[in-house]
Image (tube, rainbow, N blue to C red; front, side, top):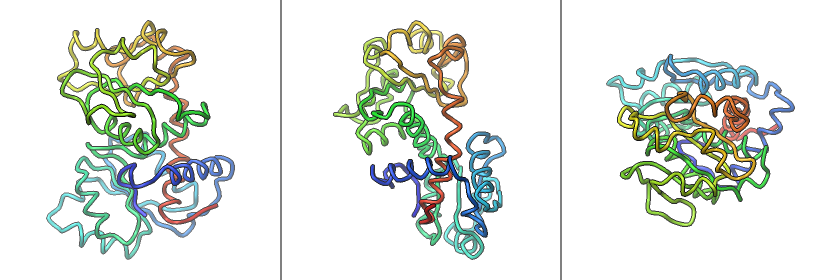
Length: 282
């Protein structure tokens, strides 16, 4: 089984993955002993690469690492994956071009897992939702507010909102709408209008176009704005985040911020995803 986008799993399968992550937190056995996973990762990747590599080795598996540019050669990806599957049990890819991961998966007999593209970031968002769910069991009754432009993170949150039926407000300047407003996804340009309804605040780094004084004044998540959210609201900015841009330095040092703590679970959720895609359980 592949994971290219969150819609590859239904809500029951996501629950199964979350339960598997719970088990892995208690018992990290060597279930991947004898298994080899090929990874395509850029040198600049920190969190996702560390947790995938450590997660595999902790379970007794081995990793072979290549830069993602390896997949940009003239050789057809259909042929590349046919060779790889002779020696590997799964492939994990972080590449800007989603279509290249799609092409690998279309011709692969072993699982292909998307570790991030410019279009989406399924493992990261599933891990965030897992962390929220373990802190707030009725997480599906919460209201999520994503502040930032249309991109891989907002796209993945929007998809997750459909699959898991989460209420998602998307706040940004006009032109960043992902889809028409519906029961689960609502786009607005007015942050102050939705703060009082928000349980979880999510952000993404600003593009060059949005790094303006006007944008930051209107949309930066500050202590004052977090105080306008619902009681016990959480701030979970997507890393890397930048103090003084999408978030203030003060709010990162506050009790609202859960980013560092939440990312501990990235290891277990990604382990669970690998095992689930391989059809293995513990």
